[in-house]
Length: 295
Length: 295
Image (cartoon, rainbow over all chains, first blue to last red):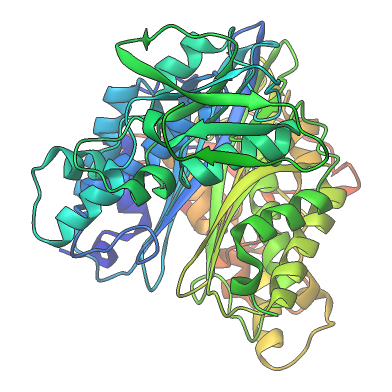
């Protein structure tokens, strides 16, 4: 059976049956969902899309990984504000001749992500299209005033990175070679965002961002938005096992956090935090210095 | 210049410069936006996607219409809950060789919709793709307990429709024939959702839905979700000028409201409301009767 045979009404009913316990006042099935925001909190709001051939390859990436990743990327963004992810909507555009098996596996990945990250699906949209597009928009909460932006880093802050870097692209390389079980492949297919770490350090952190485009690019965003400079040390970077140096520095979709803070504990929520450098005052130009060699 | 030359960073900067006054605590440019929900309100949350060739044709629909419609469809959904639309995120996937002129006009349409509907863009995502894909997710507010669902219609309620029906598809026909100025074409390209009407009747309405798939389908949703039957009269339907009967009954993307309520005034917020029939009790099967002839 293919998607076209089910029709949009059939698809909505199928999703609605599967995602009943949303914790929302009203979930899937009306013109919009109804949600409650706990008092004393701000809403954290973001979206992240996955396009076939740009973000995933149908013959290479299992459908459940596409669903899982679409949710995980948003969980990571909410976490990078120090927030707690709550509810999301997902839009899926796909060819009418797409096997229903793919669609079911896709929502299976979405469902697994809901369990793993404590979030819930409350709505969305669907359509036909020539290739597959997935877009997730997520709502979270953060205590009023406790949100951590990219722009708050101060000279003297340490720069910390959670977990390890470099395995997502290594996982993709291995996947291309047919490996579906190596830890790096698992991490590429089912990334584990650090939202719990983000929420835990929100009170100490001056600036925070998740590694979605690569350490060099994302630390560059903190530097530019905070109007500071930064120095990090190549030999301090927490490289994943067998990760290529280029991937450690520039590999995206890692969903680790980069945190600027005066001082952080070495382990938060079971995840190691590594100090990789410092924020420096900036004289006009905001620069990122990578020190090659021991500190 | 084409989209590829600008790059994602350049695109974000361009959008950020254009949409600065979002009314949000934090708008475009961080991992997520930060918003405040006024106390005593629930959040209304929905999304609506537009896929090239399924919802619009690049050589036929101007880019600003695509941006305008994507926002309008969501404004309509929030309004159909009795809510007031507030903030949205937009994801755009498009070919790298797409003219920047298209992208600028697209965001021009988004900007015009922001002005017309009193909403603001606070974030989003972008990517390359083979065809154009637009997804908007919108947040609104509704007073706690005042939301109007599809499921509340009661036997004895009148069924009301706002404005007129049948002009969106007629507009598409005219557009295909090269007409770009007829009122029906304007309405097809730049639909005017009835969110102000929805919010104004929220206290009286028992059930409400917007006409996105056609009167027959959408009134059918109220009937099914409310577990009632309904009778409407063909000669009571508020047909737009020169609209084909088929379009009046089944044409989608009208963004008028269908409202079940004991009694409503004939004009709300300057928009006529027409009583087209009644909600009936239902014995097992929930049916929709279309009466052909005078009442």
